[in-house]
Length: 215
Image 1 (cartoon, rainbow, N blue to C red):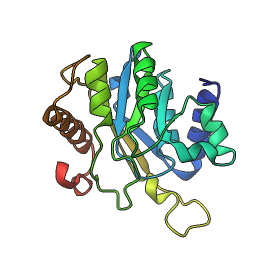
Image 2 (image 1 turned 90 degrees about the vertical axis):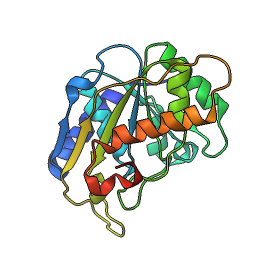
Image 3 (image 1 turned 135 degrees about the vertical axis):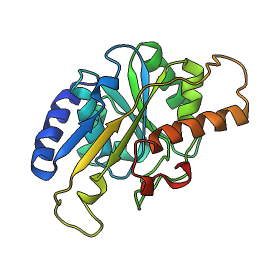
Image 4 (image 1 turned 45 degrees about the horizontal axis):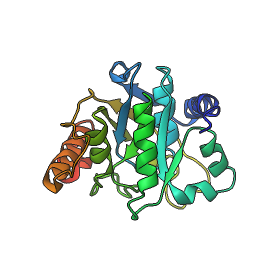
């Protein structure tokens, strides 16, 4: 897996946000400086991975983002993603290969990032999550790092041909863990409870109007 573009890409993002932002990050102290963790966040813009990744890069941590398989085939963007540690998942298919790669990265002490909703929220309100992050957390036993992002959806509003200025805020909460279960079948209710806990940790970092049913 190639990662050489993660650092330069993060720098480019921060410079770009100097013109389009401002970009403000709160809670950098909560990002683990070493060891594996799963970054979990809401998702409101295609720019979220770059913005959140550049925020983590300020602490020297490289984060591998999980992205939809279709992104791999986008001109230039798909190639740059493959050079920045991004890996791909086939949505809606229970992609076992992506799960194995995620667990392998975590076992090697790396950090990965998962957007639980699986797609962007069009109105900025938390939608319904998927259980993948909870499953990975329970199988690996690593820490979860809750993150929220606001304002990035206003950088490229629907129908706009050029970007617009918007204050973007990234908030990082305290890491926490779910009960580990390295082997055996994980009970569906335990998985659902774990997912709910993750979503509420993200919601706590969002404005009340964006928390949806997790407020």
